[in-house]
Length: 148
Image (cartoon, rainbow, N blue to C red; front, side, top):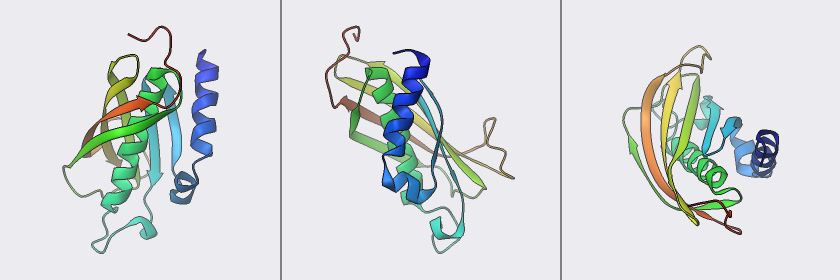
């Protein structure tokens, strides 16, 4: 896939996810084996202490891992498993999940994801880490011919 085809494919899949739209999530960057998803923090996504709900943080990890793995595998993909470690409460204006495929075989990709928060809407740069996740993503379609 060319970069334009990869981007169009990823956005087509993302736009077909009603839950992502419900959360107001944005797929902001993709590449071969990488993905970035952002959510703007707002009161209806918070728990009783005012932190972004852990379920929203988990959604970001799961979806970013799956996109990174699927793009590394060259097509549609599903999460086989993932683990998340919450480092601190998510308090900030924008929450960003950045994932990358670390190892890719013919049918699966092992991926890692870092979830950060950013103040004042500035979601560029490193941000403050609130969670780290790792997952195994499996191909939901034919394997790519050049995958290892």
